[in-house]
Image (tube, rainbow, N blue to C red; front, side):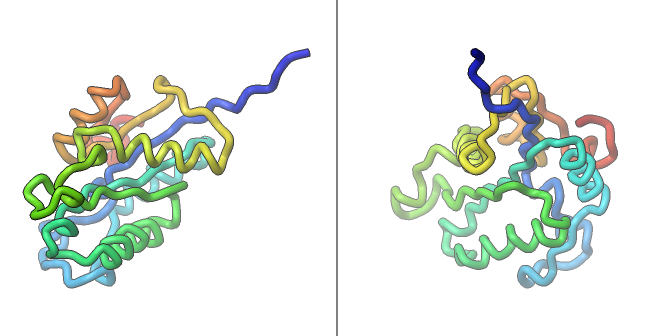
Length: 172
């Protein structure tokens, strides 16, 4: 008699700045979640990944929350707006609201700010608890829009691709 094991499934970790169009892209400042626009090529890449049976975790480092420049509920709404505008491709969304220059230790010290691994670990754990699957390192891909996220992926031994290259289909 053999014991059934959880299926192995590919995992895509996407820094949400790889999906969201920047102020420079738009030519105007953000005023709130209603101003969020997404890269259509990123939406297509996410759709293809999901159609292939993979899972996706969206993540963001939002230090403006710790500095008091952005309310946490607005930050969360921003993440969910990106998710909705991209066609709801993410299995979960996670964010780090910490900044090393914040006034208090609870906002300045964490294990989730890239290049620390907390965001990826938390996101994968949330999906694994719901789906009862395994996500092997060799089946993971990180889409990095920033250097700290690239360093995070490399430090964990995960495959990593630049956001622009990923959007254009050069990897993943």
